[in-house]
Image (cartoon, rainbow, N blue to C red; front, top):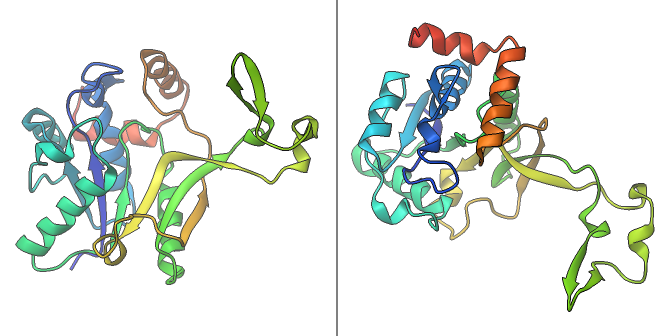
Length: 242
């Protein structure tokens, strides 16, 4: 039985960029890059694509992903949580394959450029730490948010006491910004709790990577692809010659 599943969620109806998940980068739809990363992994056994769109499903299949089910509308709104589509997928395995894989590697399509070795390192880390409830990636914040302000009645309000916001950044604990590089969930935890990450979430330090939520970010990712020797793009060009 396969115990490590990559799950790639992509709903239709993006508001920030129309049809964002299938918009092309170097001739391939955005979703294809996450599928490629999962297929090139040495640790991942199966690549499952979760979507509410038959169009997206057909494209995902062309790049090697399995689409064994369609995601219900209730888990596909812009307010739907990650837990919804995860529970739906896990329950499908329980009902149709009589088992539920334990490790679910969540790869968001909006973070298309990944190093496969880093994904495999994350899998190794969570499998080694048996007491963990999940793993979530994050990169170092350039400065502490405790140096920032809120605003009330036109006046800045500090998040710390006095004027500690003026302290050098070295005075503050290092903070990490969660990103979409790689998250890993455990089915044994998700299916028995209302949360998906839990209290023992491994903090996996990832490199900074641009996440796509605007046309400008698409253009920047395209620039990155053009100036690098992308293993993902090479793989995609073999799968779907353009």
